[in-house]
Length: 271
Image 1 (cartoon, rainbow, N blue to C red):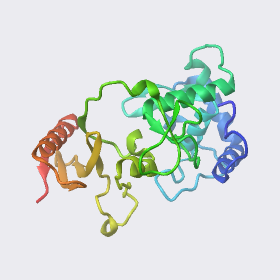
Image 2 (cartoon, rainbow, N blue to C red):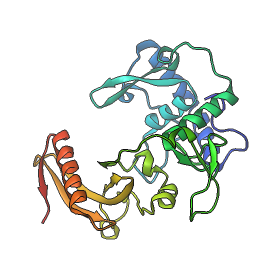
Image 3 (cartoon, helix red, strand yellow):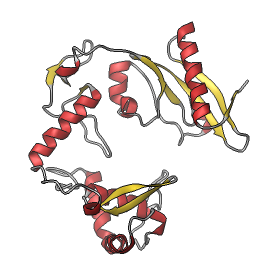
Image 4 (tube, rainbow, N blue to C red):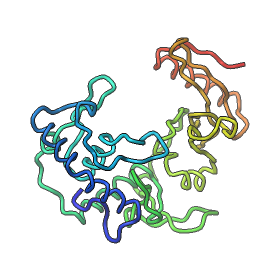
């Protein structure tokens, strides 16, 4: 937060974020004043007085307040204080975060890298930076080599002796295991893209296909649609990246049934 929008020489997208927030400083100040007086509040109750709209070809186009709030989180100005239904409630950061001593910046970067590596298990030390949450860990952990893949990796040695117990799961397209598509290809030989912005005729796996984890492998994708009007989770297709054994099929079927139950929907498989 102290070094927003980035450390060292900024990339083009970081400069764009900085300049966009600066261009909308009036709106930023009005949001802070509104939260100071009446927070916590959902985003729809915050003023959109942005002088420069947020332009995007995706789902954030013209969602000025939402984007500004996310940048204000990164700047340490606001934070999510809770939820009301499906809405996030926003408030001033100093009313949400604990009043602990601030960690020195260099140590904060090192601790972030250690925690990130602990979550990922294995990751690249450096690479192309990206928005949101990159899978890069600096000098955390120990150097490692992945057989058949060029370049250095870092591994958390404390995880190496822990027993592994695999499971089956349907993953979100934004799950950290598959979030970095290049890492997913390198480590799991798993080809995956979120295809919601592609024309339907060009989709290979579906609008919002869910990666399938089985044990320590990514084995396929489930293309399913929640039809709320009909009260059904419609399974359009189950794509097999490797031939499913009877055990994999049974596990995937169980996960699909669990998803339908969690969504409080019936289940139907498309013919």
